[in-house]
Length: 181
Image 1 (cartoon, helix red, strand yellow):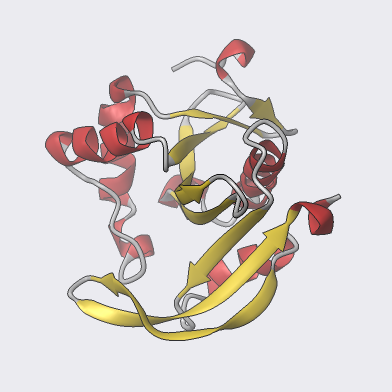
Image 2 (image 1 turned 30 degrees about the horizontal axis):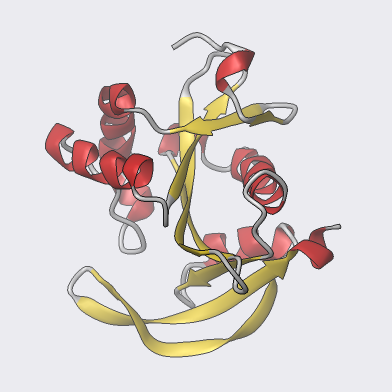
């Protein structure tokens, strides 16, 4: 899809972020399919049309979630995604981030730029105060991204999240609006 600035919620020098649509299914699933070796065993984005429809539907319709596609400005191609899950308003004003880059865009620094855009959007337009990233200890790329974007290590949670049939340990990383300012 060609780049149109009006579709993006925010743009950096090389990427823009925008919400998921159902129409993104064919591109997203093709990218997820070709990126399985990169994502496993950490991440399992949808690789079929039906799975994508269910996944995107949760991000589009559930107010406790917000999904953002990372698109390159040069051609509008989907390079990855950043989702905010478990959004809680009120006194908590927090959400949990999940993200992934697709193989064709990996290693280019695009996700660092995109994560910064999502964090800024979350702290301004969404009025959240705190964002968390839970990363498996062996997922060095995810941990490096969290660290490079200013998240601080806050702890370790054994058997925290059920992934690929097992309860997995996670490091807890977080950032607040004050830390980002």
